[in-house]
Image 1: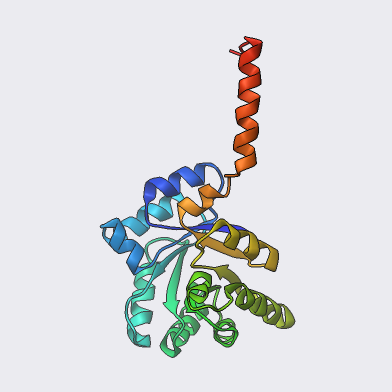
Image 2 (image 1 turned 90 degrees about the horizontal axis):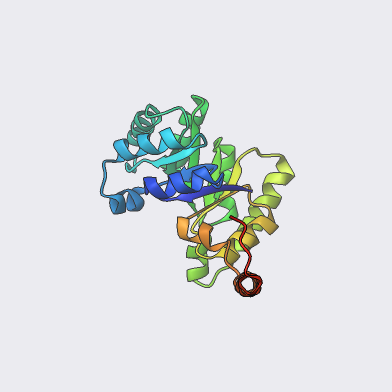
Length: 217
């Protein structure tokens, strides 16, 4: 499973990228707002750090305007994936941009039917929002599983990009059910390394080592 990091924090992206933990980056208007930086400027910097897809989202709601914004965003770098919402206008935009050879990430997906439409429109990525479904007592993982089965049934090449990842358990479950990609904040990716038994074992090893009175360096 590919790891995308969901942030516009350049320092956090660079740190994870050095460890080989970044296959791509996702941003959205809310993330850009938190960064306090110009969207074109920060997106260009991210693209210079990461070789994989960097999702940059349009803010228009009509297809004609979305297409224009998407083309503008795609000029930033070759690894830009234009991010559009899963609306009818978003699907129209996806079809046009994907036909032009551009990567398109269709976001705000909450049903298998929506995911089927996105694949038919030529989406590179479909982004089902797991956490937001969980918030309203629906099973986000069931949606990932349904999309996986549909895409496999018909050999759709659209990649399932599990989004709205809130916990390390979400990551594990996405990997088990067959998501192609997951995107999560840096804090969630780092938290995957944590385990109470690892900490306990390390504490015991260090205590025993101290008793030997030895040094390696």
